[in-house]
Image 1 (cartoon, rainbow, N blue to C red):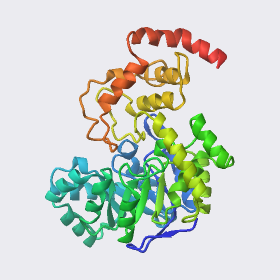
Image 2 (tube, one colour):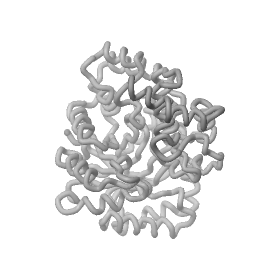
Image 3 (cartoon, one colour):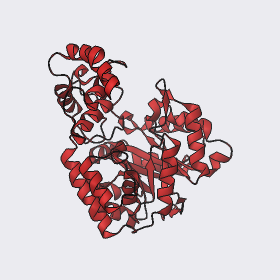
Image 4 (tube, rainbow, N blue to C red):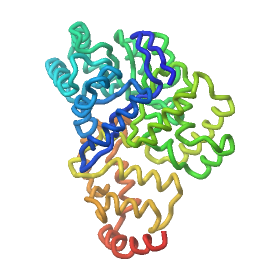
Length: 404
């Protein structure tokens, strides 16, 4: 992969970075052996930027990376992590948190350090807690080399935060569907003109823009180029932007790593044709009409005090409408009852929600999650949930397994 230069820092980064948020799990914990092989495979094939955060991997991602990024692999990558600002109530917590992160990561210095999940309200709160003093001091002491923020606010407020400090980098959600949801191209250009590194999260929108797509969207893509996968279309759109330094992908299979590296190796700046861009604009219109809840399955809302599997509930609900599934024995209904309803796994259905609101402040998409879960409950549970559960388990599943 041809490296991309970050003017502000002088670092040359691979256009594809490894996001350590969705590492493979085993019994609810990072599957260390499998994840280690994936990380090494990515590095051996040219990835030189890995991103994590304090809350990733159920709080274990930093420690895992500290264990595996040793020896030659420690020197081959630039590593980034984030300050969990939602936990910060006073200045002293920032220094204490950073020191713990350094210990977990087994490093004396963190290459790129982001304020996590920032919007204008959060930024103003942190400014009152002297976050600028903390960042300046940490850089002077060599604990962090470069600083930035991951943004989850309104697009019109993004430039205000960019101009609030001498940042080195930013991390933003950007894909062909979310091209002005949290940040628009003008905001990205503004940050780029200041020399900042632009790191892209959710380029595949939590997997929605990879793999199977609704029939109408697939027809549009295949008409333009039947050889391109949906992942290639989606990643190419982001990498086509010359302002983008690195696209972070949460890869949990070797095949995903190989495919994404192949894509990042051939996409040049401004290489998409006007016809290709127009094709993705048409797909965007189709997807926006069908997608009901703008969730990326990031899992920031978890764990739920009532044990609702929020990302999975919403994912299944979205898939029902994306693929126009109707009836009781559709994939959506079967998946709902088997995945979260209690047929095969522990119950995590939407009906368990008590609207406590704990998840709302955590959501980077600013979703009213309890309100959205009520829609999911109404769609899949309605009246007689226990009867439906019994029916799916004892009658529906045997029929489904026999004929489907």
